[in-house]
Length: 496
Image (cartoon, rainbow, N blue to C red):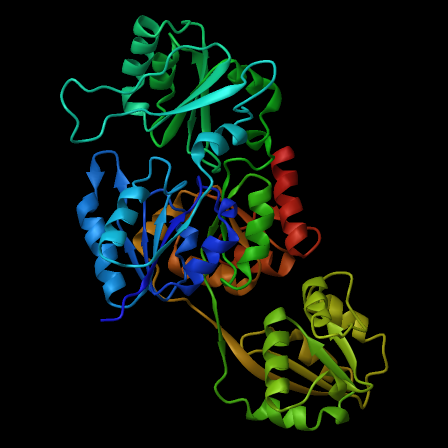
């Protein structure tokens, strides 16, 4: 029987951008991903391989560790490339060593891919350095709870007090009161030792509570802080007031839904994430290429007869060029044809194919593009518009009225996505903002979710008009009809 390969992979502390390139490569090559509760869901979204959840939350375990070990071995013995995706680092209080032992005993090859651990990354995101010349020249990391099969008299391995050390307890939230009491009463810790509790560190859900050691348990209870969280104590905690940066981001903690297609969502999601928001990718449209490309192929075969090609979306451009290349043609086919693009995003997409748009209107809507083209001599010109079947007809109609011979070719359709799972729907329903970048996203969203209390943000007036017609007028509308303009409008809303 052919044996597969197992990657024991650290997913990092929570922020999905903190995972390593090597870990992402392993995920891309995986036949099976076995993942934990603390591994960000974005790592497994949209993957077609087998995906199995084996998360543990406190005492609530999907599978016992022995069963997880057996599952990893079972999948590897099927000849699969298995990624065991674990929060943080697999070898830092992560049971990765035990899993590796089981694999070694069965002769199954494995590779360890370390991850960024929460013990130093969560404090960094909270503005607390582990070491600092004025406060700590060393640090100690301690497990904050006993193993499940420990003897009755076995306790946490409490450290000895050292005022020049930083102490970090992982998995100790349920034991916080006990830990505080033992450190003060038995290890001579100063009751005034500064302590920070960081819940969901490195994520937009991050919350931080600081207090002296003698009061920290009461303050955490008052703040209703829950695991996962780390406990950090020592003089370095006092630096948070000066150095906190993550929770000072302008959109920190805001849950913002991105409704663009999965392929297009990343740009907006990244911009929102950098500003501290939690971007929830909820694509409400799929781009379905037309099966019959006869019309487009005919147009491509006679491309030299056209005076203008007008592109009204990035999707149209990518499909157009894919078909052009399939016919063994390239950008040289354009010759002296002029190119119009409806906006900056479409113009930028053209750059990827070595082409520059001759005309881009100041306002990125069909009406503005039509106004600009009417400044040209259109009578008797031949214009090709490859577009979606549900695209507005105002542009093609206006160009025809100006005397042009317009060939509007439908090359794709915007369709509803596959049914959405209830967990995602619940997440979307708790969002602070829903972003809409087209009329299609607005129509499809409200066909899936009938109502929302979230703030509605529109990329521009055309999408805004559709939202009004749907009974959901936008609270935010971009002045520049681009992704950057939409993000700036959201920032202005909160600053205002």
